[in-house]
Image (tube, one colour):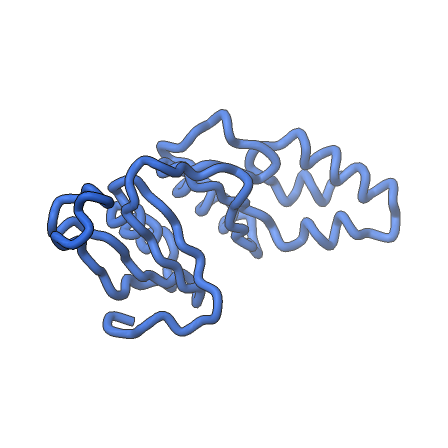
Length: 165
């Protein structure tokens, strides 16, 4: 991906204040199938607008599990909110535990509920066992309701507790 131009039709762009490179390196370390691509840097042109020192990272293309992203150092104008999050579909409790532990470290503990967390960069993630949808769509509506009630009480989702509901 190093010299490749972004190839997918829609690419999420993540706006960071000035720590896009740190965030990208963190995300790439968390997800096994990931890589960093092209890095562009601010020059003198437009400095009166962007106010970034020449040579500062402007954008970084990166790929996580086949999904391409761009991270931008755009300054403190915009912040992440829970209105946008990324869902990590997990097959096992070990996967749920791994991603929860890695992504929640240093994040906002007040933003942890129902499988959602906010990482140390303010980005929201949903760490979700794939069986959850199956359990919530069960033909037995009482069971589906119990699963929902159990999930609503959790921070990190627990597959066995959901199954037991």
